[in-house]
Amino acid sequence: MTTVAPSAYHRRVAGEKRAAILSAATGLFLSAGYDGTSLARIAEAAGVSKATLFKQFPTKAALFDAIVTESWQVEEDAGPEPPAGDLRAGLTMIGHRYADLLTRPGMTALFRIVIAELPRFPELGEAQFSRGKMPYFTSVSRYLAAAHAAGSARVHDADLAATQFLGMIANFVFWPTLLLTDWAPARPAVDQAVEEAVATMVARYQAVVPASAG
Image (cartoon, rainbow, N blue to C red; front, side, top):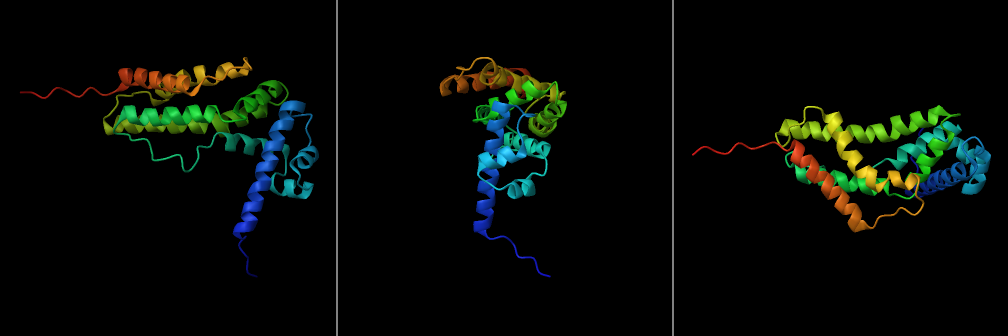
């Protein structure tokens, strides 16, 4: 029996339905709570059949995992890999991408869902950590280790350095949004926060090239 691959049209329709489901689920989780939102209600809000929703997401936990994973993904067309041989350029690239990630629509809402429901559903925190934040953190730590190996940096604890760098950016760009509903710094302020974080990291970790004798 031959299997017919889905056409471009069917893939596009499936992608549109998936996006509608994720958007509807995020909104309902935030307004009604994770426990107070059923898959049937999500299907209705997304404008899809329950069979379509269950085919893609058989459980509410699977749906939430997908929301987290997608929220933390860097776009495939985000640009070239950060250069390990140029610490300032690499960190600048990573820093701006991180700021863009944290200011995506829905990122604050996702954290609010987790915080609100964590006492009753600790698995939501686990999903946010293991499927979202940790893979992204690992990618930054891996870059810093590569910069060390390339000789552009002296980073003996890449995890600590990644924590420092991402924290400097998130503490200005993101964390205030959880408490201040009107916190939305303008782009120049965000860019400055990234530039200052990069400057701090370069001052601390950039490899010192010995002066040539003679």
